[in-house]
Image 1 (cartoon, rainbow, N blue to C red):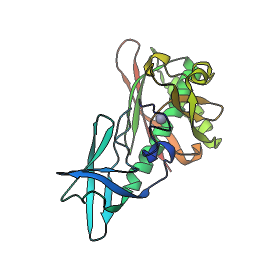
Image 2: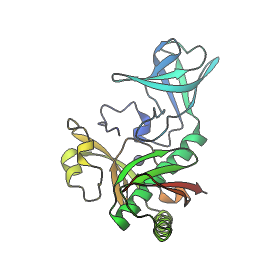
Image 3: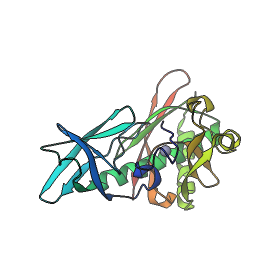
Amino acid sequence: MVSLTPQDAGHLIYLHDAYAAEVQTVVLEASEGRIRLRETPFYPGGGGQPADRGWVRWEGGEAPVVGHHQDGERLWHEVGGVPPPAATGVRAALDWAHRYAVMRHHSAVHVLSGVVNHLFGSAVTGGQIYADRARMDFALEDLNRDRVAAIEAEANRIIQEGRPIVVRFIPRAEFERHDLVRTARDLVPAHLDTIRIVEIEGFDAQADGGTHVRDTREIGMLRVVKTENKGKANRRLEIALSV
Ligand SMILES: [Zn+2]
């Protein structure tokens, strides 16, 4: 989970605009196999969401973006081949098909966790998002077939309502009294006075650093494809989406 203030995170375009598939920017620093960009659309991974892949393109060159790493405050992108030198103007482009599929599955797990919480009062204990599926673990003892069917039906009902999914940066005090937020308060670092909230309007809100679609209808039809017993009071649900 990442929560950053808008001032700190202005260059992290994905925190403000999940649909920025391409960004015109400048290389700030380059060293062997890696670059740092003035602005970046690349999500570096974390919070259960996989890292973006893509390319940087400049006059006379192109390099694939194959990974990312953080060095203190600085986010580096690992590139294949010879990186463009500092001060080069580049277009940073996501592998959009991959990112958008991840955004749909990420948004789907918000719907899923909201539904499981509303129906059974269960909290999320873990999860992982992929481009073609996602899984979530819940503090839940019983996950029989009727419950799975109820979860699936309710999730698809919410999705089809076409609820907006909005990102806001809110003061900590507002976060603490927000009636939709279910994120454990102690998971959000104490020093942050501004917190990034992702809210499915009127349904669910989370402190969250990832990327999501802007309307629940973009998620598509949700199916529970697998359930697993992960311990006495821990059940795993795996979902897949169809358009
Ligand atoms: Zn999220």
